[in-house]
Figure 1 (cartoon, helix red, strand yellow):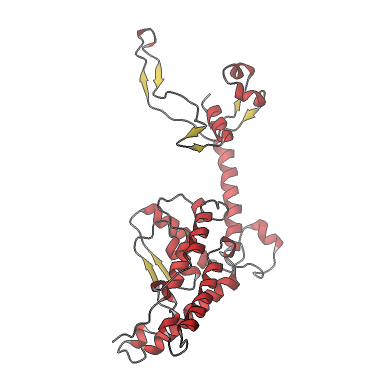
Figure 2 (cartoon, one colour):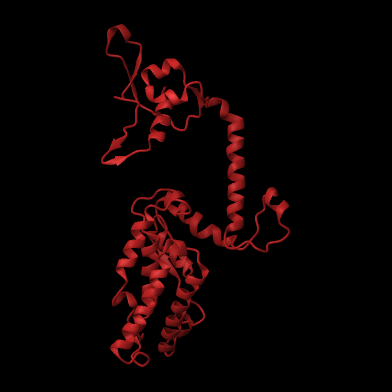
Amino acid sequence: MTSYKKKLIEVALPLEAINKASAREKAIRHGHPSTLHLWWARRPLAAARAVIFAQMVDDPSAHPDIFKTEKAQEKERQRLFKIIEDLVQWENTTNEEVLQRARDEIWQSWRATCAENADHPHAKELFDRHKLPAFHDPFAGGGALPLEAQRLGLESYASDLNPVAVLICKAMIEIPPKFAGKSPVNPESRKKIGSQAGWKGAQGLAEDVRYYGKWMRDEAEKRIGHLYPKVEVTAEKVKDRPDLKPYVGKKLTVIACLWARTVKSPNPAFAQVDVPLASTFMLPQKQAGRRMSSRLSSAVSIASL
């Protein structure tokens, strides 16, 4: 029979710190998986990291032989809370010292579990003290949970029926570990380096993505850029659009185009004219209480001219 120890998540969590870090994460853009592809119901990385850690680590009350009194247990619990509080901070997402402290606690609890179940008939398969149990998320979606499980040292498996979710998970979980610690292969970076030394994690892969991404963008502009001409803001256009006055005489790059279905004009005098089914070509400055970027609004509006 399996011997079970109560986990930290079953007793208490530093919810205030987790909630605060999760709320702050919504404003993070640079380096966040959400910038890879927006995904509805994306779980905050901070909460995912904290929950997985708390699921893997024993609560001090599970070891009365070590923490004999409630006071001693609470003191140890606060120490574990401090690890979680450090762990959920966005700045510590790739902080190896903080992550390693969390991994060490997970290993310690796992080895204790293995020792407790040494007499289990399948102990060799189920309770290998040298190998952490794998993590599997069958409905991975945006991949927050398997990503954080992997970050905490667990072997992660993710699956989803949505091909977009699968692609996101591959980009975050499957591909980066294959190139971890390897130097980039693009010619520009290879001129600057002589060995693989100094490339940590997926830094080398990131250099290649940046280099070849720029190459593809430049190549696309070279081949089909003429199909996307710039828009010149003239004095004539400014008459109807005074907000474009600062751009008079400039040729602006179109960053988005508005698309609308069309119908033939109901006016018999213009029966052959296609009329777009759109009440306006201006993006609103305010909508549902949210203020949109005036710069984006102007850029898209210019594209519709």
